[in-house]
Length: 251
Image (cartoon, rainbow, N blue to C red; front, side, top):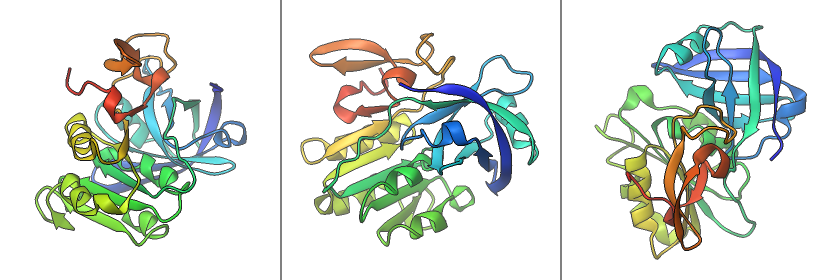
């Protein structure tokens, strides 16, 4: 795996929903290496541990990073100014495996939605299903509309889109797709994997707390199946994307 740490220039910082911020950072050397489903590790002023953030989109010179304020570190990040220099370790992890000739369905929940944008751009005629708790947390719909007409939105309370869960939509359209790529909280990933089991291949991107981001510590270890063996693997090194049948959900 090729990764490095370099200074990036923050060229955009916008709050796009309640507590959710949209960054664009610039660094030519590392941005062009990014692949869909990977993440970065951001050094936050005054904090020892870096903050892992999924890559929402990537250009030749820039990375787009969308994150939610969940603690002191991300709160500091949300207050940074355009023009600030940010030290970022990137790109990290193993992302989604996208093959030609398949129709993919990308399923995201909450802050697991952002990495699906760059991933969906790598395919033809993607289907995208996004789910949020309510309308105040809905993000990136206009971005997805630019790449597909098969876009579905679900909210837990019915305040936007379909009243229900992403799996409700997925069940209705399963016969229209060849493979699923999902990112979101563990209960959602387990539910998506259950829908796909025995019908279509499914890749899941796990959201775990991380210390180093490069496999040097064991903070993000989770129980997985490798071949015929059960073992603890580090999400940052072996993932964050796994075959859905390799993961022991909630164990």
